[in-house]
Image (tube, rainbow, N blue to C red; front, side, top):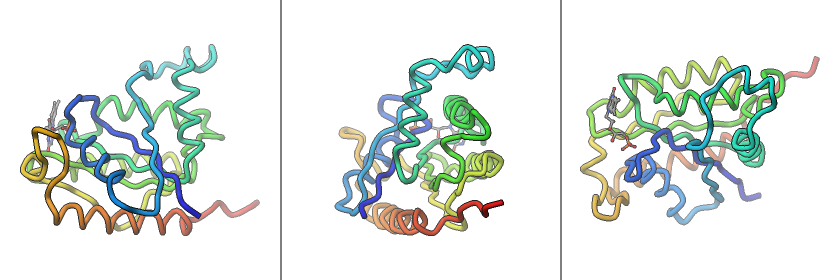
Length: 188
Ligand SMILES: Cc1cc2nc3c(=O)[nH]c(=O)nc-3n(C[C@H](O)[C@H](O)[C@H](O)COP(=O)(O)O)c2cc1C
């Protein structure tokens, strides 16, 4: 059956390279369906808000994640770490802890930067945080895109580099396979 994949972009910038990379997944002629899962209207996480009842933006964000078979996060790194807006979104998604919509959800990680290390440091942190949340992150495979500004048509903000497209297509195939093979909890 066709898989539905949610796309979270860790940058709120209008001409974000990472959003352009995420868009390129949608533009491939492939077997998956995609939905954007937006994080820009989420409030700062605050346990007082949580106790008062999650705001509508949080409820619909969680529902967006619940409704898809897997999520691919496409994000820059800031100061070798996770962008604050993305961490904030993950903190909202992690609650309530016992019934988090991300619990055991298959998740893929992609990152792009004009720099030379392809967001390797931020992705390592992201993997650690998601593991703490018991998320099924696609193991072993890394999709790190360096010098992204040379791989994008800046006028249209679309990915033009053919090799990067091939890498992304292969990553996507591996991720779709992972959706069906990620481990499920052992019953008590
Ligand atoms: C606060 C801040 C910190 C950054 N830190 C890093 C970094 O640690 N490593 C890196 O490769 N790029 C870093 N950058 C550059 C970003 O990779 C670059 O701005 C990129 O275009 C952001 O992604 P976007 O195009 O999807 O918005 C940083 C940018 C900002 C604004």
